Image (cartoon, rainbow, N blue to C red; front, side, top):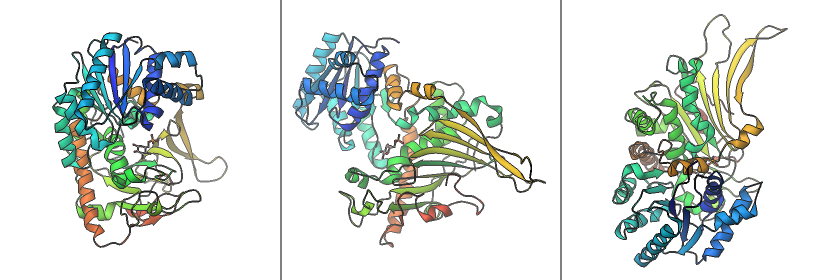
Length: 482
Ligand code: BG6
Protein backbone atom coordinates (compact mmCIF):
# COMPACT_ATOMS: atom_id res chain seq x y z
CA UNK A 1 0.00 0.00 0.00
CA UNK A 2 1.14 3.52 -0.60
CA UNK A 3 2.26 5.72 2.23
CA UNK A 4 -0.10 8.69 2.13
CA UNK A 5 1.12 11.97 3.63
CA UNK A 6 -1.57 13.70 5.67
CA UNK A 7 -2.46 15.63 8.81
CA UNK A 8 -5.78 14.39 10.13
CA UNK A 9 -7.84 16.49 12.53
CA UNK A 10 -10.44 14.59 14.51
CA UNK A 11 -13.10 16.76 16.16
CA UNK A 12 -14.29 14.61 19.02
CA UNK A 13 -10.83 13.09 19.58
CA UNK A 14 -11.56 12.23 23.22
CA UNK A 15 -14.87 10.58 22.40
CA UNK A 16 -16.18 7.06 22.34
CA UNK A 17 -16.27 6.68 18.56
CA UNK A 18 -12.64 7.75 18.21
CA UNK A 19 -11.60 5.36 20.96
CA UNK A 20 -13.58 2.30 19.90
CA UNK A 21 -13.47 2.63 16.14
CA UNK A 22 -11.21 5.29 14.65
CA UNK A 23 -7.96 4.72 16.54
CA UNK A 24 -7.96 0.92 16.08
CA UNK A 25 -8.89 1.33 12.39
CA UNK A 26 -6.11 3.88 11.82
CA UNK A 27 -3.67 1.57 13.56
CA UNK A 28 -4.55 -1.29 11.21
CA UNK A 29 -4.04 1.00 8.22
CA UNK A 30 -0.72 2.07 9.71
CA UNK A 31 0.36 -1.55 10.04
CA UNK A 32 -0.61 -2.16 6.44
CA UNK A 33 1.51 0.82 5.43
CA UNK A 34 -1.24 3.05 4.02
CA UNK A 35 -0.20 5.76 6.45
CA UNK A 36 3.20 5.51 8.02
CA UNK A 37 5.99 8.02 8.33
CA UNK A 38 4.25 11.08 6.93
CA UNK A 39 1.04 11.19 8.89
CA UNK A 40 -0.02 12.92 12.05
CA UNK A 41 -3.33 13.09 13.89
CA UNK A 42 -4.64 15.97 15.97
CA UNK A 43 -7.34 14.90 18.39
CA UNK A 44 -9.37 17.86 19.48
CA UNK A 45 -12.21 18.12 21.98
CA UNK A 46 -13.32 20.04 25.04
CA UNK A 47 -11.49 18.02 27.68
CA UNK A 48 -8.13 19.44 28.78
CA UNK A 49 -5.96 16.49 27.76
CA UNK A 50 -2.23 16.62 26.98
CA UNK A 51 -0.50 15.09 23.95
CA UNK A 52 0.87 12.37 26.22
CA UNK A 53 -2.53 11.55 27.65
CA UNK A 54 -4.07 11.21 24.19
CA UNK A 55 -1.16 8.98 23.15
CA UNK A 56 -1.80 6.74 26.16
CA UNK A 57 -5.48 6.58 25.24
CA UNK A 58 -4.61 5.61 21.68
CA UNK A 59 -2.40 2.76 22.91
CA UNK A 60 -5.19 1.70 25.26
CA UNK A 61 -7.74 1.75 22.43
CA UNK A 62 -5.52 -0.49 20.30
CA UNK A 63 -4.96 -2.86 23.18
CA UNK A 64 -8.71 -3.21 23.78
CA UNK A 65 -9.48 -3.92 20.14
CA UNK A 66 -6.53 -6.07 19.17
CA UNK A 67 -5.87 -9.60 20.36
CA UNK A 68 -2.31 -9.66 18.99
CA UNK A 69 -1.27 -6.45 20.68
CA UNK A 70 2.32 -5.29 20.11
CA UNK A 71 3.12 -2.49 22.54
CA UNK A 72 6.16 -1.17 20.70
CA UNK A 73 4.25 -0.82 17.45
CA UNK A 74 1.28 0.77 19.19
CA UNK A 75 3.50 3.31 20.94
CA UNK A 76 5.30 4.20 17.76
CA UNK A 77 1.95 4.73 16.06
CA UNK A 78 0.62 6.77 18.99
CA UNK A 79 3.66 9.07 18.85
CA UNK A 80 2.06 10.60 15.73
CA UNK A 81 -0.89 11.84 17.82
CA UNK A 82 -1.29 15.34 19.28
CA UNK A 83 -4.04 16.86 21.35
CA UNK A 84 -5.54 20.32 21.18
CA UNK A 85 -8.16 21.27 23.74
CA UNK A 86 -10.86 23.08 21.87
CA UNK A 87 -14.08 25.00 22.27
CA UNK A 88 -15.75 24.67 18.88
CA UNK A 89 -17.40 28.05 19.13
CA UNK A 90 -14.23 29.97 19.99
CA UNK A 91 -12.38 31.50 17.01
CA UNK A 92 -9.02 31.57 18.85
CA UNK A 93 -9.03 27.81 19.08
CA UNK A 94 -9.17 27.47 15.32
CA UNK A 95 -6.18 29.76 15.04
CA UNK A 96 -4.25 27.55 17.50
CA UNK A 97 -5.39 24.47 15.61
CA UNK A 98 -4.19 25.94 12.35
CA UNK A 99 -0.77 26.69 13.84
CA UNK A 100 -0.43 23.15 15.17
CA UNK A 101 -1.53 21.66 11.85
CA UNK A 102 0.99 23.80 9.96
CA UNK A 103 3.76 22.76 12.35
CA UNK A 104 2.92 19.07 12.05
CA UNK A 105 2.61 19.34 8.32
CA UNK A 106 6.24 20.51 8.18
CA UNK A 107 7.46 18.00 10.74
CA UNK A 108 5.91 15.00 8.99
CA UNK A 109 6.19 16.28 5.39
CA UNK A 110 2.45 15.93 4.97
CA UNK A 111 2.46 17.95 1.73
CA UNK A 112 -0.41 20.20 2.79
CA UNK A 113 -2.90 17.30 2.79
CA UNK A 114 -5.66 17.48 5.39
CA UNK A 115 -8.48 15.21 6.47
CA UNK A 116 -11.04 16.71 8.83
CA UNK A 117 -13.14 14.18 10.71
CA UNK A 118 -16.30 15.30 12.50
CA UNK A 119 -16.94 12.72 15.18
CA UNK A 120 -18.69 14.81 17.78
CA UNK A 121 -22.16 16.10 18.67
CA UNK A 122 -23.86 16.85 15.34
CA UNK A 123 -25.15 20.21 16.52
CA UNK A 124 -21.59 21.52 16.08
CA UNK A 125 -20.99 20.26 12.54
CA UNK A 126 -22.13 23.50 10.89
CA UNK A 127 -20.17 25.75 13.28
CA UNK A 128 -16.99 23.76 12.77
CA UNK A 129 -17.37 23.81 8.99
CA UNK A 130 -17.86 27.57 9.04
CA UNK A 131 -14.79 28.13 11.22
CA UNK A 132 -12.64 25.82 9.09
CA UNK A 133 -13.56 28.09 6.23
CA UNK A 134 -13.21 31.45 8.04
CA UNK A 135 -9.88 30.61 9.64
CA UNK A 136 -8.61 28.96 6.44
CA UNK A 137 -7.68 25.70 8.08
CA UNK A 138 -7.57 23.90 4.79
CA UNK A 139 -4.13 22.89 3.55
CA UNK A 140 -2.42 23.47 0.20
CA UNK A 141 -2.76 19.79 -0.85
CA UNK A 142 -5.95 17.72 -0.80
CA UNK A 143 -8.63 18.57 1.76
CA UNK A 144 -11.30 16.05 2.67
CA UNK A 145 -14.11 16.20 5.17
CA UNK A 146 -15.42 13.05 6.82
CA UNK A 147 -18.71 13.54 8.58
CA UNK A 148 -20.65 11.25 10.87
CA UNK A 149 -24.39 10.95 11.01
CA UNK A 150 -26.87 12.38 11.63
CA UNK A 151 -26.46 14.76 8.73
CA UNK A 152 -29.23 17.16 9.77
CA UNK A 153 -32.45 16.46 11.62
CA UNK A 154 -34.76 16.86 8.62
CA UNK A 155 -34.41 18.03 5.03
CA UNK A 156 -34.32 21.73 5.93
CA UNK A 157 -31.55 21.41 8.52
CA UNK A 158 -29.60 19.02 6.30
CA UNK A 159 -29.77 21.59 3.49
CA UNK A 160 -28.49 24.27 5.84
CA UNK A 161 -25.63 22.07 7.00
CA UNK A 162 -24.76 21.16 3.44
CA UNK A 163 -24.63 24.84 2.56
CA UNK A 164 -22.25 25.53 5.46
CA UNK A 165 -20.02 22.65 4.48
CA UNK A 166 -19.95 23.52 0.80
CA UNK A 167 -18.33 26.86 1.59
CA UNK A 168 -15.11 24.99 2.40
CA UNK A 169 -15.52 21.63 0.70
CA UNK A 170 -16.72 20.67 -2.76
CA UNK A 171 -19.15 17.73 -2.85
CA UNK A 172 -16.42 15.46 -4.19
CA UNK A 173 -14.32 16.02 -1.06
CA UNK A 174 -17.16 15.35 1.40
CA UNK A 175 -17.31 11.80 2.82
CA UNK A 176 -20.60 11.21 4.64
CA UNK A 177 -19.95 8.04 6.58
CA UNK A 178 -22.53 5.31 6.87
CA UNK A 179 -20.72 2.44 8.53
CA UNK A 180 -23.16 -0.09 7.09
CA UNK A 181 -21.63 0.61 3.67
CA UNK A 182 -18.35 -0.72 5.04
CA UNK A 183 -19.85 -4.08 6.02
CA UNK A 184 -18.77 -7.16 4.12
CA UNK A 185 -22.22 -8.42 3.20
CA UNK A 186 -23.57 -5.01 2.31
CA UNK A 187 -20.65 -4.71 -0.12
CA UNK A 188 -21.64 -8.16 -1.39
CA UNK A 189 -25.12 -7.13 -2.56
CA UNK A 190 -23.99 -5.87 -5.98
CA UNK A 191 -21.73 -8.86 -6.80
CA UNK A 192 -24.51 -11.22 -5.71
CA UNK A 193 -26.96 -9.49 -8.01
CA UNK A 194 -24.64 -8.97 -10.95
CA UNK A 195 -22.60 -12.17 -11.17
CA UNK A 196 -25.21 -14.89 -10.64
CA UNK A 197 -27.73 -15.62 -13.40
CA UNK A 198 -29.80 -17.49 -10.80
CA UNK A 199 -30.19 -14.20 -8.94
CA UNK A 200 -29.91 -11.69 -11.73
CA UNK A 201 -32.66 -13.23 -13.85
CA UNK A 202 -35.25 -13.27 -11.10
CA UNK A 203 -34.55 -9.74 -9.85
CA UNK A 204 -37.93 -8.31 -10.86
CA UNK A 205 -41.57 -8.10 -9.86
CA UNK A 206 -42.50 -11.19 -11.81
CA UNK A 207 -40.48 -13.39 -9.42
CA UNK A 208 -39.96 -11.38 -6.26
CA UNK A 209 -42.99 -11.04 -3.99
CA UNK A 210 -41.33 -8.71 -1.47
CA UNK A 211 -38.05 -7.82 0.15
CA UNK A 212 -37.48 -7.49 3.89
CA UNK A 213 -34.70 -5.69 5.72
CA UNK A 214 -34.37 -6.37 9.43
CA UNK A 215 -31.84 -4.54 11.61
CA UNK A 216 -32.61 -5.77 15.10
CA UNK A 217 -30.73 -4.92 18.26
CA UNK A 218 -30.99 -6.61 21.62
CA UNK A 219 -29.71 -3.68 23.69
CA UNK A 220 -31.81 -0.72 24.79
CA UNK A 221 -30.76 2.93 24.63
CA UNK A 222 -28.64 2.57 27.78
CA UNK A 223 -27.00 5.91 28.54
CA UNK A 224 -27.79 7.35 25.10
CA UNK A 225 -31.35 8.36 26.01
CA UNK A 226 -30.56 12.05 25.52
CA UNK A 227 -29.37 11.57 21.95
CA UNK A 228 -32.09 9.05 21.22
CA UNK A 229 -34.84 11.47 22.23
CA UNK A 230 -33.73 13.78 19.41
CA UNK A 231 -33.63 10.93 16.95
CA UNK A 232 -35.78 7.83 17.32
CA UNK A 233 -35.40 4.65 15.29
CA UNK A 234 -36.54 6.26 12.03
CA UNK A 235 -33.80 8.88 12.02
CA UNK A 236 -31.19 6.72 13.79
CA UNK A 237 -31.40 3.68 11.52
CA UNK A 238 -33.81 4.09 8.60
CA UNK A 239 -32.73 7.44 7.22
CA UNK A 240 -29.23 6.07 6.68
CA UNK A 241 -28.43 2.35 7.11
CA UNK A 242 -31.74 0.86 6.02
CA UNK A 243 -32.09 3.21 3.07
CA UNK A 244 -28.56 2.50 1.87
CA UNK A 245 -29.26 -1.24 1.95
CA UNK A 246 -32.57 -0.79 0.15
CA UNK A 247 -30.90 1.39 -2.46
CA UNK A 248 -28.33 -1.33 -3.19
CA UNK A 249 -31.11 -3.89 -3.49
CA UNK A 250 -33.27 -1.85 -5.82
CA UNK A 251 -30.96 0.29 -7.95
CA UNK A 252 -30.45 -0.39 -11.63
CA UNK A 253 -27.10 -1.92 -12.54
CA UNK A 254 -24.51 0.83 -12.89
CA UNK A 255 -22.82 1.29 -16.27
CA UNK A 256 -19.42 0.85 -14.59
CA UNK A 257 -18.27 -0.01 -11.09
CA UNK A 258 -16.70 3.34 -10.24
CA UNK A 259 -18.03 5.79 -7.73
CA UNK A 260 -19.60 8.21 -10.24
CA UNK A 261 -21.51 5.51 -12.10
CA UNK A 262 -22.69 3.84 -8.90
CA UNK A 263 -23.97 7.13 -7.50
CA UNK A 264 -25.61 7.86 -10.84
CA UNK A 265 -27.47 4.54 -10.70
CA UNK A 266 -28.52 5.19 -7.09
CA UNK A 267 -29.78 8.59 -8.08
CA UNK A 268 -31.79 7.23 -10.97
CA UNK A 269 -33.53 4.89 -8.54
CA UNK A 270 -34.06 7.45 -5.79
CA UNK A 271 -35.67 9.94 -8.16
CA UNK A 272 -38.50 7.39 -8.37
CA UNK A 273 -38.85 6.87 -4.60
CA UNK A 274 -42.51 6.94 -3.57
CA UNK A 275 -42.94 9.48 -0.75
CA UNK A 276 -45.60 8.02 1.56
CA UNK A 277 -48.89 9.80 2.13
CA UNK A 278 -50.39 9.95 5.67
CA UNK A 279 -52.75 7.18 4.60
CA UNK A 280 -49.85 4.94 3.55
CA UNK A 281 -48.08 5.64 6.84
CA UNK A 282 -51.17 4.64 8.73
CA UNK A 283 -51.55 1.36 6.89
CA UNK A 284 -48.00 0.27 6.22
CA UNK A 285 -45.97 1.59 9.15
CA UNK A 286 -45.79 0.67 12.80
CA UNK A 287 -43.85 2.21 15.68
CA UNK A 288 -43.49 1.60 19.37
CA UNK A 289 -41.42 1.69 22.53
CA UNK A 290 -39.89 -1.19 24.44
CA UNK A 291 -41.00 -2.41 27.82
CA UNK A 292 -38.64 -3.36 30.64
CA UNK A 293 -36.46 -6.46 30.66
CA UNK A 294 -34.66 -8.06 33.60
CA UNK A 295 -31.63 -5.88 33.05
CA UNK A 296 -33.06 -2.63 31.72
CA UNK A 297 -35.93 -0.27 32.51
CA UNK A 298 -38.60 0.46 29.91
CA UNK A 299 -37.82 3.25 27.46
CA UNK A 300 -40.12 5.75 29.16
CA UNK A 301 -38.16 5.36 32.39
CA UNK A 302 -34.69 5.49 30.82
CA UNK A 303 -32.23 8.19 31.77
CA UNK A 304 -32.85 11.53 29.99
CA UNK A 305 -36.06 10.29 28.39
CA UNK A 306 -39.25 12.32 28.85
CA UNK A 307 -41.86 10.26 30.74
CA UNK A 308 -44.43 11.16 28.08
CA UNK A 309 -42.03 10.73 25.15
CA UNK A 310 -43.47 9.71 21.79
CA UNK A 311 -40.10 8.86 20.31
CA UNK A 312 -40.11 5.41 18.71
CA UNK A 313 -37.54 2.76 19.65
CA UNK A 314 -38.92 0.45 16.96
CA UNK A 315 -40.22 1.14 13.48
CA UNK A 316 -41.43 -1.02 10.64
CA UNK A 317 -42.55 0.27 7.27
CA UNK A 318 -42.63 -0.05 3.52
CA UNK A 319 -40.62 1.49 0.70
CA UNK A 320 -41.60 1.51 -2.97
CA UNK A 321 -39.96 2.65 -6.18
CA UNK A 322 -41.56 3.51 -9.49
CA UNK A 323 -38.45 2.65 -11.48
CA UNK A 324 -35.58 0.19 -11.39
CA UNK A 325 -35.51 -3.60 -11.67
CA UNK A 326 -37.81 -4.17 -8.69
CA UNK A 327 -40.24 -1.32 -9.33
CA UNK A 328 -43.54 -2.16 -7.68
CA UNK A 329 -42.07 -4.79 -5.33
CA UNK A 330 -42.86 -3.85 -1.72
CA UNK A 331 -39.69 -3.49 0.34
CA UNK A 332 -40.48 -3.86 4.02
CA UNK A 333 -38.11 -2.90 6.79
CA UNK A 334 -38.04 -3.03 10.57
CA UNK A 335 -35.51 -1.98 13.15
CA UNK A 336 -35.56 -1.51 16.87
CA UNK A 337 -33.89 -1.66 20.24
CA UNK A 338 -34.55 -4.47 22.74
CA UNK A 339 -35.49 -7.06 20.18
CA UNK A 340 -34.81 -10.78 20.35
CA UNK A 341 -31.31 -10.87 18.86
CA UNK A 342 -28.67 -8.58 17.51
CA UNK A 343 -29.10 -9.41 13.85
CA UNK A 344 -28.94 -7.58 10.53
CA UNK A 345 -30.38 -9.42 7.57
CA UNK A 346 -32.16 -9.16 4.25
CA UNK A 347 -34.79 -11.65 3.09
CA UNK A 348 -35.84 -11.73 -0.54
CA UNK A 349 -39.12 -13.59 -0.81
CA UNK A 350 -39.99 -15.18 -4.14
CA UNK A 351 -43.52 -15.88 -5.32
CA UNK A 352 -44.87 -19.35 -4.67
CA UNK A 353 -45.01 -21.77 -7.56
CA UNK A 354 -48.60 -22.61 -8.16
CA UNK A 355 -48.71 -26.12 -9.61
CA UNK A 356 -49.26 -29.77 -8.75
CA UNK A 357 -47.01 -29.50 -5.71
CA UNK A 358 -49.30 -26.78 -4.44
CA UNK A 359 -48.09 -26.67 -0.87
CA UNK A 360 -44.41 -25.88 -1.53
CA UNK A 361 -42.86 -23.00 0.40
CA UNK A 362 -41.51 -20.05 -1.51
CA UNK A 363 -37.80 -19.90 -2.27
CA UNK A 364 -36.13 -17.16 -0.28
CA UNK A 365 -32.74 -15.61 -0.65
CA UNK A 366 -31.39 -14.42 2.67
CA UNK A 367 -28.35 -12.25 3.17
CA UNK A 368 -27.08 -12.26 6.74
CA UNK A 369 -25.01 -9.15 7.41
CA UNK A 370 -24.43 -9.58 11.16
CA UNK A 371 -23.43 -11.27 13.40
CA UNK A 372 -22.16 -13.76 10.81
CA UNK A 373 -21.73 -13.25 7.07
CA UNK A 374 -23.78 -15.60 4.95
CA UNK A 375 -26.06 -15.86 1.93
CA UNK A 376 -28.48 -18.74 1.69
CA UNK A 377 -31.26 -19.90 -0.61
CA UNK A 378 -34.12 -22.01 0.67
CA UNK A 379 -34.77 -24.89 -1.70
CA UNK A 380 -37.60 -27.45 -1.85
CA UNK A 381 -37.19 -31.14 -2.66
CA UNK A 382 -38.95 -34.42 -1.91
CA UNK A 383 -38.84 -36.23 1.39
CA UNK A 384 -36.98 -39.53 1.31
CA UNK A 385 -39.42 -41.95 2.84
CA UNK A 386 -42.70 -40.17 3.30
CA UNK A 387 -44.75 -38.10 0.96
CA UNK A 388 -44.36 -34.38 0.86
CA UNK A 389 -41.64 -31.82 0.50
CA UNK A 390 -38.69 -30.88 2.56
CA UNK A 391 -36.85 -27.61 2.65
CA UNK A 392 -33.10 -27.11 2.87
CA UNK A 393 -30.73 -24.19 2.74
CA UNK A 394 -28.02 -23.82 0.11
CA UNK A 395 -25.46 -21.69 1.76
CA UNK A 396 -22.57 -19.42 0.81
CA UNK A 397 -20.48 -18.78 3.88
CA UNK A 398 -17.01 -18.07 5.15
CA UNK A 399 -14.60 -20.06 7.27
CA UNK A 400 -13.48 -18.73 10.64
CA UNK A 401 -10.10 -17.87 9.13
CA UNK A 402 -11.75 -15.93 6.33
CA UNK A 403 -14.01 -14.08 8.78
CA UNK A 404 -10.95 -13.08 10.77
CA UNK A 405 -9.62 -11.29 7.71
CA UNK A 406 -12.72 -9.14 7.24
CA UNK A 407 -11.72 -5.57 8.11
CA UNK A 408 -13.97 -3.57 10.37
CA UNK A 409 -16.32 -1.25 8.48
CA UNK A 410 -14.50 1.81 9.77
CA UNK A 411 -11.14 0.53 8.62
CA UNK A 412 -12.52 -0.03 5.13
CA UNK A 413 -14.14 3.35 4.95
CA UNK A 414 -11.16 5.24 6.34
CA UNK A 415 -9.00 3.47 3.78
CA UNK A 416 -11.36 4.74 1.09
CA UNK A 417 -11.07 8.30 2.39
CA UNK A 418 -7.27 8.12 2.16
CA UNK A 419 -7.37 6.86 -1.42
CA UNK A 420 -10.25 9.20 -2.40
CA UNK A 421 -12.75 6.47 -3.28
CA UNK A 422 -16.25 7.80 -2.63
CA UNK A 423 -18.16 4.72 -3.75
CA UNK A 424 -19.27 3.72 -0.27
CA UNK A 425 -20.24 7.13 1.05
CA UNK A 426 -23.57 8.90 0.92
CA UNK A 427 -23.93 11.48 -1.81
CA UNK A 428 -25.87 14.63 -0.99
CA UNK A 429 -28.47 13.92 -3.66
CA UNK A 430 -29.20 10.52 -2.05
CA UNK A 431 -29.45 11.98 1.40
CA UNK A 432 -31.97 14.54 0.20
CA UNK A 433 -34.33 11.84 -1.01
CA UNK A 434 -33.96 9.86 2.24
CA UNK A 435 -34.87 12.94 4.22
CA UNK A 436 -37.94 13.63 2.07
CA UNK A 437 -39.21 10.18 2.91
CA UNK A 438 -38.42 10.48 6.62
CA UNK A 439 -39.95 13.96 6.82
CA UNK A 440 -43.19 12.65 5.29
CA UNK A 441 -43.40 9.82 7.83
CA UNK A 442 -42.55 12.15 10.72
CA UNK A 443 -45.20 14.66 9.61
CA UNK A 444 -47.84 11.91 9.50
CA UNK A 445 -46.81 10.71 12.97
CA UNK A 446 -46.85 14.22 14.43
CA UNK A 447 -50.40 14.48 13.23
CA UNK A 448 -51.35 11.12 14.71
CA UNK A 449 -49.67 12.07 17.99
CA UNK A 450 -52.37 14.68 18.62
CA UNK A 451 -54.87 11.89 19.13
CA UNK A 452 -52.83 9.36 21.09
CA UNK A 453 -51.61 9.41 24.65
CA UNK A 454 -48.88 6.88 24.30
CA UNK A 455 -47.17 4.85 21.60
CA UNK A 456 -47.75 1.12 21.31
CA UNK A 457 -45.41 -0.74 23.65
CA UNK A 458 -43.67 -4.01 22.88
CA UNK A 459 -42.11 -6.62 25.11
CA UNK A 460 -38.33 -6.74 25.29
CA UNK A 461 -36.68 -9.73 23.66
CA UNK A 462 -39.18 -10.28 20.87
CA UNK A 463 -39.85 -8.86 17.43
CA UNK A 464 -41.13 -5.37 18.07
CA UNK A 465 -44.72 -4.16 17.98
CA UNK A 466 -47.65 -6.49 17.43
CA UNK A 467 -48.99 -4.13 14.77
CA UNK A 468 -45.81 -4.56 12.70
CA UNK A 469 -47.20 -7.96 11.71
CA UNK A 470 -50.01 -6.22 9.88
CA UNK A 471 -48.25 -3.65 7.72
CA UNK A 472 -48.14 -5.84 4.61
CA UNK A 473 -49.83 -5.23 1.28
CA UNK A 474 -51.30 -8.75 1.23
CA UNK A 475 -52.66 -11.07 3.93
CA UNK A 476 -50.39 -13.84 2.68
CA UNK A 477 -47.22 -11.85 3.47
CA UNK A 478 -45.40 -12.09 6.78
CA UNK A 479 -41.95 -11.54 8.28
CA UNK A 480 -39.58 -14.30 7.26
CA UNK A 481 -37.29 -13.83 10.23
CA UNK A 482 -39.37 -14.67 13.32
C1 BG6 B 1 -25.71 3.41 14.72
C2 BG6 B 1 -26.87 3.81 15.58
O1 BG6 B 1 -25.66 4.16 13.56
O2 BG6 B 1 -25.82 2.04 14.38
C3 BG6 B 1 -26.96 2.96 16.82
O3 BG6 B 1 -26.74 5.18 15.95
C4 BG6 B 1 -26.95 1.50 16.44
O4 BG6 B 1 -28.11 3.28 17.58
C5 BG6 B 1 -25.82 1.16 15.48
O5 BG6 B 1 -26.82 0.75 17.63
C6 BG6 B 1 -25.93 -0.25 14.95
O6 BG6 B 1 -24.80 -0.58 14.21
P1 BG6 B 1 -24.28 -2.08 14.12
O7 BG6 B 1 -23.10 -2.04 13.20
O8 BG6 B 1 -23.90 -2.48 15.51
O9 BG6 B 1 -25.42 -2.89 13.61
